[in-house]
Figure 1 (cartoon, rainbow, N blue to C red):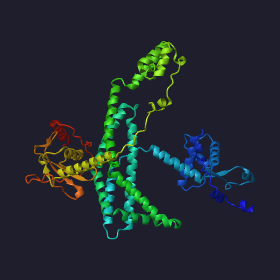
Figure 2 (cartoon, rainbow, N blue to C red):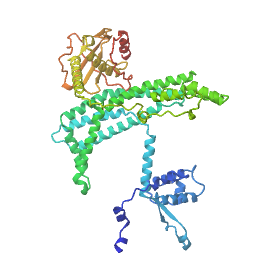
Figure 3 (cartoon, rainbow, N blue to C red):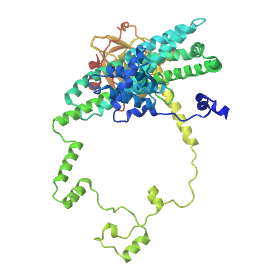
Figure 4 (cartoon, one colour):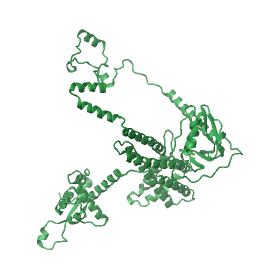
Length: 576
């Protein structure tokens, strides 16, 4: 008996774990929830000033003058309820006792409990996440490039510095996490903005212009820097430098682990760093059968611009008084309300929605014979007519049970072999298209010669990425493809000459440019099938730094038929 009573409460809780108590959140669902939140906020502010205990009059003075109760007694009652729920702890206040009667008078001082502080931290996180609008952090892309280059420098040392590796990886992880979280939050809030229907037209139009400019700047940076980041990640992984850097960071992080956790701390830290690096690589580098998150974000941002313009068009149609579905339903509801009787409402219902009696059910021969022998008058109400019995299989699946032997298991080996052949053929076509486009140096666009459909599609994608970064006043630009495999350098000639690229489906024409396409996977110009540089071609022009704002990125079109030369010419002239 003595051994049972001598056990401490902490030992009892460890031996008999109980479910978590969520009573500290009870003040959120009561009538005076606003007052309770203000009282708890007053304790949090006091804690930041290193004040541990508060008296009722201190809490009363800390409340907002416009919303505080009429007297201190209401605050005291709120404090007692918070003590009951476990948010606060009450201790006798003996500091102001000056007489015997003061000793017996009920006086308490209050302080936050661990449960109350944890509940307020959770509510603060909740409010922060709900209030976050997110943003597209173009600066984070520059910081990621800087940290990846720093990792290359650290990894090239004979004995990499552990502290430098840990700091570089920590900053890289923090910037990437912030970029991904804010991009996800921004795209979610952008979709909610697109889905708005009751927003003021003038406010939305003004917001639309700023938003499109914001998207254009981020898309330009994502096109320019995304391929560079993918190339740096590939360089680190191909040379086998990532693993040692991650082990250095894991060892430094595990150095301060508690003694009981020291055995497994380094392994756990290395696993965590490996997961972070894997997430970074998958975000910027596309894999087999999987597009990178950066490419998906770019496509989503590009797709949101036409959606915004569609919303503007809908708003303009509303302002012009044109009918839409919501207006039609409101008109129909008004007609129902103005109908003289139920018969008229039923006729209106049938005309509007076309719901008639069910005549599509099929019946068997026995049912037809029974109906022929004993016909059912057409005037019989639905509820009084004889029921039509339907097979449970038909009711459940929509078709009768198939009779006979079950189907044989199909052999998919031949189909898989054909798919593998198609995939191999497509990979070979892509390789040949890359080799065909590599120029081996700056050449005129007019000297590319005739391109097959696969090489022409790849050429259009590269040209679209280059023109997406062009703005008035620029004479040259350098862009890396989204997967970091190719680089295109485009330089304006300004001599008024015209280039024509012939394809089996048509002629691609426009102002002549100086173009240099490099295969980055081979470490240089590479490729043997590209057009060579001409001695008469002008030298490449050094391109200026990328501008802060550029026109919106135009996705590469799919060339599925003859391409009108006049339409292509307009595109090139606009981007110049």
